Length: 177
Image 1: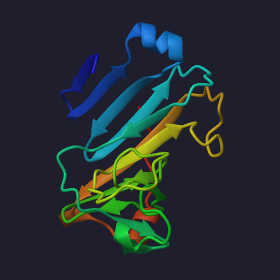
Image 2: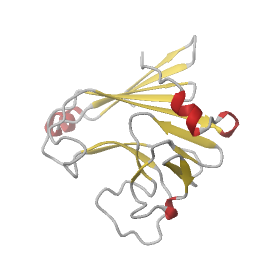
Image 3: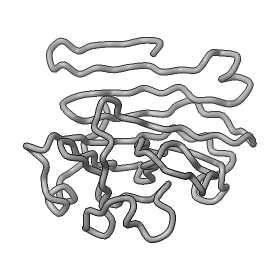
Image 4: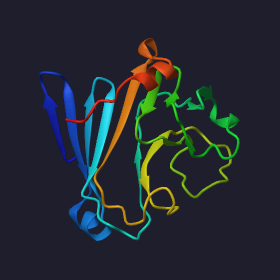
């Protein structure tokens, strides 16, 4: 974190996350602004330059129990029950563990066993959940020469105030200010 700002009126935190200037310039790396407020995290990626080099950017919530389930087609399932590879999967309604649910509004690609974009055979995997914000590894879902500013929004809630999937989908997302 290179800079941190706190709004004393509403406990909103704003973090500026950036790479060293030489690395950002040589590899077209972006700057990230992360806003944390009331269980919501918004990440704004700015200044990304076109690059033919493989890149991937990830978001992880630390300090949470690594015993995740993910929502697929309005059902909560364990990663080991995913047909195909459980290493990276879309969670259309979020992920949850025993005490927290995370609802990604813009970044539904989840790696439940760590950041393994091109590794498919992991023996004895251990849960280590990340959201994939951007990657150009496959050259399919994300354009190789992507340069746009992008906003990624996530809501997290404790077990006490978790809505059902249907309630959450009806709620309106908030904008980063």
